[in-house]
Image 1 (cartoon, rainbow, N blue to C red):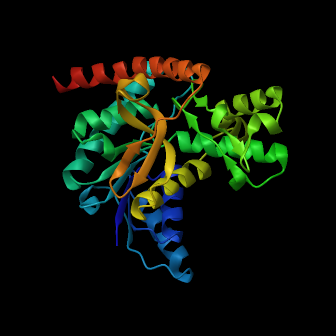
Image 2: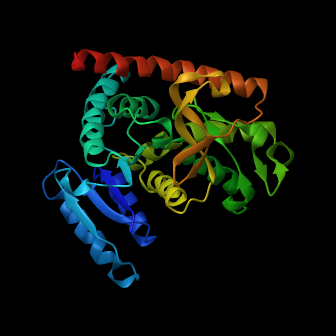
Length: 314
């Protein structure tokens, strides 16, 4: 049985573990610094699977010993941005956390594929690459899939159709600079522009960009976790089952889309080898320029992480 270790047993990590378990995808290890938390969640999930025909090993731990020889490491550990905290502060705090996670995890599982969720997502992928030295196929950020799920949901709500009938891709960074690719968005094979007006499409794009904030505002405390966990599970399932499905993920570019030396969301074919192929879409000039602008924002944040690592490794 394959093995997934999830570092960070908060809402996203624990929900990812539960979805992984009910799909019977892999043995599970939950790791968290809070004593008793990962153990309790692991036991609860194990008990939940007793009547589901699932036979997995599910454990929680406060150390990395149990993660040894994992096939996939999911990194959710980190802190959310708090009032009064600058973007630079958040980058530095989470760079320190993710660097430690990557170092400890990669020592125990030198052949693992990393799936990163911690924000700012693209820069945290870069931190994992710098710390582990792993090739780009083995470091993948989850963001574009989540944004795409949200966009599909909003289109489906507007048209009262099955979200499964919608093809969409949201590229770029996971934030205000994300780039919904309208030219490739279709409903049952029809271009979205033939089905919805330009104004309605614009409303959906804006709602997609603010999808996370909308949930935060509704909850008052906390943030989304069901949809992010679902997005991760789509990735792990594609990797373990070698489906070769194409999803928008944050990966390291080496010239694709005219970009290099940074992580950014682009269409990626997932399989046993991780990010096996970067798919280059034929974008409109406006979409390509928006992707380049998104890259500029990511590069600035990535530079903060890079400088932090340099200072603390000296």
